[in-house]
Image 1 (cartoon, rainbow, N blue to C red):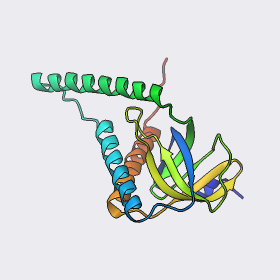
Image 2: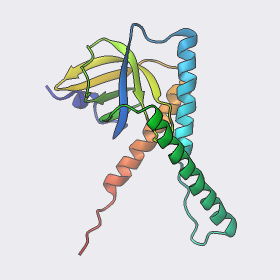
Image 3: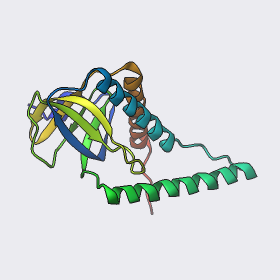
Image 4: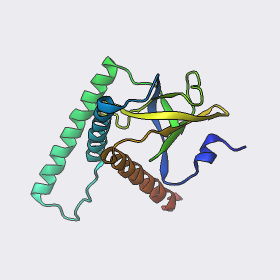
Length: 186
């Protein structure tokens, strides 16, 4: 039998190393609690998308474009400093290798293994500048060879679509990186 990751398939998803925590729950959030969680996740994914947004530099930028670039760099510096300060106040969990798709995640936990069938929140810190974690309701579906797999619970469409956009963007970036020829130095 293959690993959990093999069973997940290699469809639309990406691999990364992110601070991650599994928070066990008695039951998955529902009703108003589930809606608030979905809204918070949607806002977080929108913020991450904005912070990861890259603009193509013009060959000959105008003075206004140069000034906007300087402002952008200063804002990024402030965000990094603020994020570092917040991490000192409330340390993040250990970064773990994981595979994230629009419907599931798999990772090798550094803590005790959750039980198959248990429910909880998978907390992922997607951006070092932001103190909030993506807190996705999930159910553990497999534990094999030290690897855990969780399938995400259904969430409102607006939240699911935000996760799909995030995963697709990172998947596309990973595919692009693998297709670029490596630079050979002589």
